[in-house]
Length: 319
Image (cartoon, rainbow, N blue to C red; front, side, top):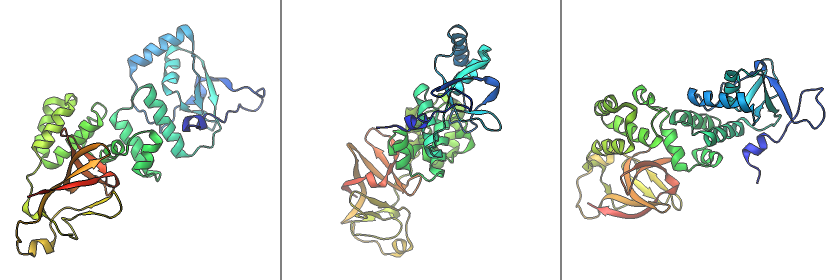
């Protein structure tokens, strides 16, 4: 099966005047510029220096890939690190593949993410931006996951990190996505307590610390969020049956619920045990980061936004 990456580099041409069949060209570094939308925004100076030292001795062993020349020159599709190292090494030219692939903007961006990620993992800030851009181009979280070879749950976490407070966003280049997500939940519950941990630990915060703080700050269940065993409508209701294997989750008391007289405790439900694939956990009666997800506390303590369509009710917990 042809991959996105293979499709992107499949159409290769040379400038007019080049011999037929020639696929590579030595391009002057002065005629090449970096893609301003490259998913990778941070580069390790020490690694670039090591790569430059290797190039001085062995030249450039793997060509970069560029778009056909435009008014500014040749824009890099793949190979920004090699381009930077070649300049540092003092080289005047670099071997390049000139690609005329007509791949869509979505496929180009997805391939750039994969190519960057396979060489050196993108940090949380870079992946969050890439996911946001792909969704802005019309993809759902599930489609983004398919493009990047990642689970819907992983993509939903990146999607939830788009609107972080500045104090947490500053940690995104260093912390893992799950750690940052747990901190974002804790921040919503108690910003001052979360800020205290950030001030104390900075980018040294571990996922265990973030999960522990989020769990500690979790509010106690409120009586007005009790879900009756009989089918309900409006906020405060958890419905199964919107489609096989799907849920409809809403939170908060309704006017009807708050005006109604208390009923017998018989038949009241305190929560739901759920399964997501082979994983088990407990459904939280609070909204997920977007309409496509709900929050599930999985066995082991991790709270994750989970695609609603993947959640299966196992049993209710009696009050």
